[in-house]
Length: 117
Image 1: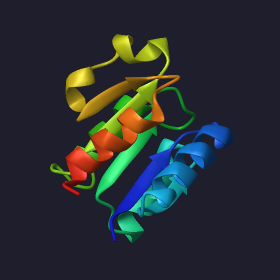
Image 2 (image 1 turned 60 degrees about the vertical axis):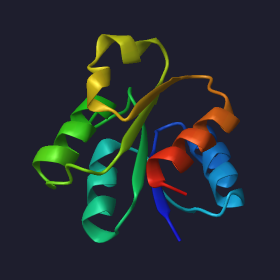
Image 3 (image 1 turned 30 degrees about the vertical axis):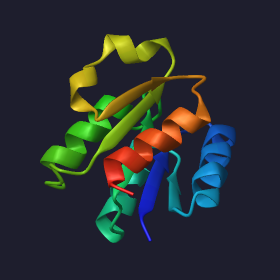
């Protein structure tokens, strides 16, 4: 079973997205900020990360850079979900970028495409 890590400091978004992905048959891990996400990635194997941009500790861009540089996970797909801040960063670092609020069916379709299920 494929595991997805959702990283966001907004618990409601994490829960809603997590429940939707679990309903689709995915295992879901959750982290409330970038540092906790890195800890989770050191402990568990995941096939995909979905992260917010604006978070305490590390923002989404800093998180994806740490995933690539510190953890050497160059092929791990990372989806960015964000409000207007996504345009301020470097969207080329991410496998996909979704503006909040996003369409859940589109998100699930992109997850399936990236994981290959």
